[in-house]
Image (cartoon, rainbow, N blue to C red; front, side, top):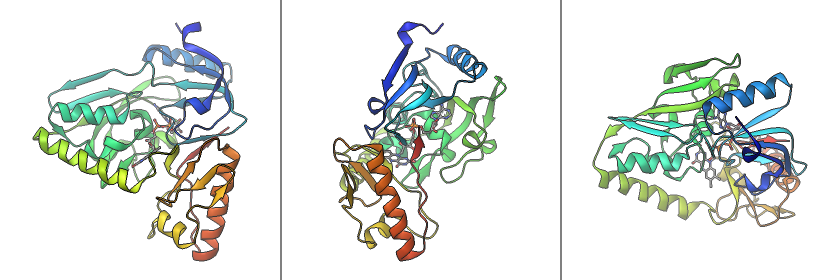
Length: 290
Ligand SMILES: Cc1cc2nc3c(=O)[nH]c(=O)nc-3n(C[C@H](O)[C@H](O)[C@H](O)COP(=O)(O)OP(=O)(O)OC[C@H]3O[C@@H](n4cnc5c(N)ncnc54)[C@H](O)[C@@H]3O)c2cc1C
């Protein structure tokens, strides 16, 4: 059962988010396995304690005041993987990049698109993460979830309601326990070449040397957020220590020591200016907590 070893008090969320921003969480719980996770969630829910599931924290802006409740982190304990034939099963806390690397080593194609996405399997299913023309919906066979009533179910991909950065998992508050991918055998060198090419393209275009949560805004229909922001003259726009990246206008970056309030101020200004100039309302892709 979860004990002192896997619970922290007043844990700074800046240490668990790629933005490197966020005040303390009252409780930070790291269940060792699926059974412990179920038990932890049952106890928290019965106590009426607010709780939030954390993957790699790569799509999150946690407030400076932190989170009043329990962060349940899956990347420490839910890290099992199993490969069988063309199928790869990963537990929710496995980094997507590791899954992509593993598929390559097994000579299985399909997860190349994911090699540069710094999220977990759970977070990636939650929002149907995707890049360079691929997304989770293309390669998932099924996802094992914990439902609100405490039961588990294995949902085939076509029952997950996956669309652009959305899913039934998010809409219905399901917890991803594991995902099974259906991949295709392919030449390992070709898979590696594709991954290297995508990594190079990312390094050339994205400000990977600075903390961020990736693309700050969703792609508005018929536009690219980065282009609208740069056309509005906002590249480099800065509040405190947060700024619109000078390398890729779609990213708000932490220049070192940024607060969540700085990032919010940049986001709101960008939304206002882009709407004023082009009549397009940018919706944040990054999720706010606390
Ligand atoms: C440099 C950089 C580049 C990026 N590039 C891309 C990209 O190309 N494409 C892309 O799609 N995204 C990209 N992202 C964003 C991010 O990596 C993805 O959205 C990723 O899927 C988030 O996963 P996570 O584990 O970090 O989720 P978190 O940030 O930890 O959580 C995000 C949401 O998922 C929920 N969640 C997490 N785990 C579970 C679970 N097991 N069950 C239910 N809900 C869960 C959380 O509660 C939260 O609401 C990028 C981010 C960075 C920093």
